[in-house]
Image (cartoon, rainbow, N blue to C red; front, side, top):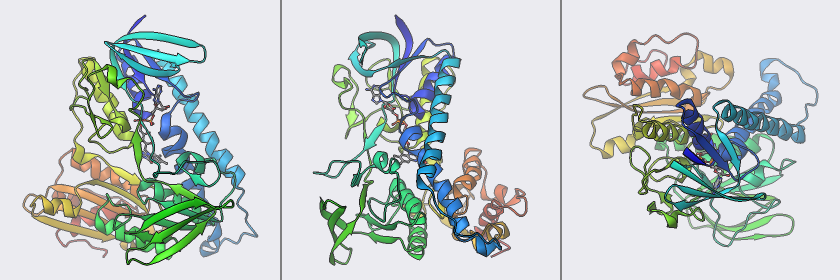
Amino acid sequence: MAYDLIVIGSGPGGYSAAIRAGQYGLKTALVEKQAKLGGTCLLVGCIPTKALLHTADVWERVEHSELEGIKLDNPKLDYPKVKERKDGIVNKHSNGVAFLLKRAKVERISGYATLLGAGKVEVKADSGTQTLEAKNIIIATGSEARMLPGLEPDPEFILTNIEILNLTSVPKSLIIIGAGAVGVEFASIFKRFGTEVTVIEMLPRIVPVEDEDISKELERNFRKQNIRVEAGARAENIEKTGTGVKLSLTTKNGKQETLEAEKLLVAVGRKPNTERIGLENTKVELDRGFIKVDEYQRTGEPGVYAIGDAVAGTPQLAHVATREGMIAVAHMAGKPVTPINKNRIPACTYTEPGIGSVGLTEAQARAQDRKVKIGRFPFAGDSRATILGHHEGFIKVVADEEYGEILGVHIIGPEAFELIGEAVAAMEAEATVEVMMQTIHAHPTLYEAMGEAFNAVYGLSINA
Ligand SMILES: Cc1cc2nc3c(=O)[nH]c(=O)nc-3n(C[C@H](O)[C@H](O)[C@H](O)COP(=O)(O)OP(=O)(O)OC[C@H]3O[C@@H](n4cnc5c(N)ncnc54)[C@H](O)[C@@H]3O)c2cc1C
């Protein structure tokens, strides 16, 4: 049977693309090798981590409830129950994806897909092998955790995002290698559950893709929370001891130390799933393992598109995968389509304090020879932040001095991941700093701090 579209992979890129194709009336099939739908994001990424982070927030509140005049006798963390809640959220939404696909009349096919070339896809399942044909194919095979050379993940000691999410108790100590979003989020989860956490990053600063001031503020806060941070450091000779792991650390000052912990989390980036999917049978081109695409997500093979974590040139984020899916499907269906503007992709890191950012960092703007003006407003000047008991951090606006163009916004503080939405909308609508200064921000809210940060660009903030 011939389809208009076969989507390979049911992550946020693949399932959203398949649903949109169904909405457009395309005869669509979605192939997924795993029993559950939802990909990395839903099963072992965005959603389970945020469920745990939410519980960590609640637990932190409970532990410090006396600050709010609430006395609790001997509260206890029941981690198996915490995990059960997290698993429940994942299962609910994975079933939700199945329902949405069915409603959009997308055929779900279980098995491992390989491209055979010329619009053909082979699907291998326990029940047998079949060859499907389609006018269009979307590769949405996502990514998996990169490992350090010579290391293999196992359920007990050397963990990736998959194994750590399956732990049934809170480890006493945890070393995390890699301080990108994944590494620092797990640091933020387990520290607050009582684990002794060390974060090791090879680059000179943690969350290295963020604005430098954001990295500094997160590091300062992590240290305050007694998370050990070793940036510009190297971990070597990693070995299992039988009861945990041991490694040698060379700090940024060249000091050598042996570290031991119950668990090690390797969070050194994500490898695209582009091997063993039959790309050699096509004209699809790769760039260091990532699939090369044009602005409509087309690969080098006619009729074959690629989206999400497997693609070169865009950040590995769920909302990017989804947007790329929308672009690919609209393009193949002959609908109006606007390619991604890479400068307007929000990125959120759900640490405590949280991070939300969009656009150019100060350093990037200066490197482009822009006349940069910075507006900065601390959450300490925002009454809602004080009411919530989370007044760490600030909002930093990077603006063009000449025209008041908003080049970037970088937030670290309470609900940063929600607040960044205003900045994304402002940039998408091409609002200037002046427009945002005139925008009335309700009181008392956290997003009032956004208005203040825009005013700060011209030295006109009121509350700081
Ligand atoms: C711990 C963690 C936390 C994260 N948190 C966030 C966050 O808060 N916000 C955010 O935006 N991003 C987050 N991410 C990143 C996000 O998960 C990814 O960007 C997103 O899942 C990419 O979507 P995708 O559709 O490209 O691929 P994936 O979600 O990786 O899905 C790919 C799917 O394809 C299937 N597949 C692969 N090969 C085949 C094959 N040959 N045949 C059939 N099926 C196949 C896989 O089984 C999988 O289901 C996080 C990632 C991790 C690891």
